[in-house]
Image (cartoon, rainbow, N blue to C red):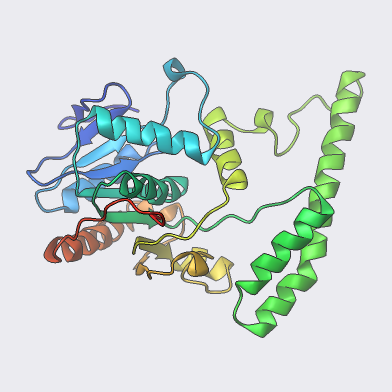
Length: 296
């Protein structure tokens, strides 16, 4: 990632960058993918007197890439602390970075800090694929209970056995492919849905999502949703997060789909939606949130 003119090296070292200028507390943007600095520059240009503090994805000098949510949160909180950033904090992330932003908000609140804004840009709650039959039954029954519409709930339960069998079949195919490779048989190409089939950062993000078990958020976060992503989930504008948001959520529509929202044709509208949501927060009185037993 190249630093553009006007970007400044973050005070926490090579893992961060300050994009834009302003006197307000920065919007902390958590990266887990490539080329997200262009997103931050567009957002910074739309903000009024608020820079963006970009927490960049880990580089080779950091060692193994995080592949569990706790590791991403630890890394993000360290960057915030190293930079000397104090609350009220404003957090945002696209895709997996959005879920990390919500989890960083949970951590900071539990440690007694104020979080004024925690935004997830178009990251749906991932479905898990338990390996054992008993675990799969419990998981899918729990997922079905979260669906209010009876028709959709019944349809989900009817599809659940096929989902489990798909996982069993995929793992069996991988075992066969590895065995054939060991004996020099068959195609030597990468095995699908394994680390060798993805760039390391993409695979680490994939593993993070597949192993993440969310808990309710006892604060009111922000969610940006593309209509295309919502349509994939039967027009669920909460992207499967509904029952995990007991305090409610501020939902904003963005154009395009999960990736094209940042294309030239849509990026200005996406950045403007983020800027509007932040202005709404700025107009409200910030109430400190100390840590408590349900600091979610």
